[in-house]
Image (cartoon, rainbow, N blue to C red):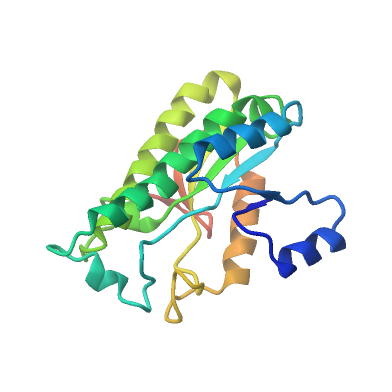
Length: 207
């Protein structure tokens, strides 16, 4: 498990579960990713979960819809969004592919969003975030094709609109429901699911 900064909650988690290793990692720092891959070399990873993601400089509660509306684009903010949401998962997959490919389950799961779906976009807006999630969906599709000969299952996973600091207080899904659903989906993944965008409820979603 990785986090940018240590915290009392993470330290307590590590003490309560001795089998959990917690590492400092910032996915914006590609050298940091390479260093961690080097330290963990030789350890198989059954499921590599790319969970890090940013909506932008503001959350839904703080005005993300307004800040990412047409004519209001902050391209410096876009750069960070893409570095975390798109380049981060790609670099992680490339750095840890041998650990995944030599494991038993061979799964790479990147948390995406239904907001990256072209088909489901009927409301517009959120340009930077939507574009980043559409991009990472494309990456996971290509990855599924390229890694199929190694039997690696690469998928994009929509966690739902979850009540977190990012999702805001009006989000429809609580954290426990989302996590339970995603764990169930990940457990049941087969090679037939590779390249799909799958919701936390198990439904395959359109790109």
